[in-house]
Length: 316
Image (tube, rainbow, N blue to C red; front, side):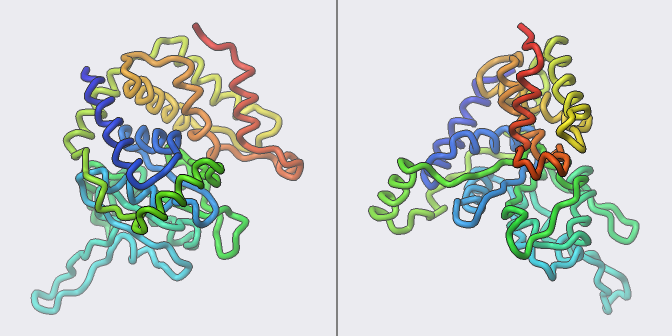
């Protein structure tokens, strides 16, 4: 198990991203964990805080195929997955692939498309395949969706279905930079006008690297006490008085898988409670629903997750 190789690849990603992005170290680490575990990520934040830029930078770090889809209210499912077109020459239908046929797909403003278009992503995100007119088409390894969205209270947005949100391993909430980082952004922009020039970023991870990394992560050990710890966290979301909907078994699996990756990039072959706690919030925050009363009171998902984690004895 070559955890030094995983650490080196993580450091290379950090180094390349820092050429364009200032700050966001935790967000970059979460994105790296998701990519190393072949998981999809959705990033939420107000316009102008570099959600799309960060996703493009991550895609540039990977030496694999990349497509971008801009979601709009008039986008149709066939615009994403493709369609059968009649070929007059041989009197047969030929399938024309849509932009979803790639290794990394950046979906910008995913919540600006209606439910019918969102439903086109269900199968491909879960099963890594597309079915059109009874014919299935498999996606190449790896297949990753990096999605961005604006807060749901903004004009022209649609609420994503819970079934779709559950297919994202993480939901990452991006906030405004602090004063120190904003000064750094302006200083870099002043000294180098093309501060978002992505040509500086060099691809440092291949598909074969990702396959090797994922094989190594699977071998990270989780003792029974930590398996119980993860199960308790998810189970308590289903019985918490502030929650209308709790985490599914898919959430427990996502916590385990991403905690193993966190351990691997830290150079360990075993997970710790700190690994579990680090990944629990981005795994759970889009999978739980507050009751309407608690939403009106201003309680946040983060508060409930923090309360649940603190209420469970930490295994040692």
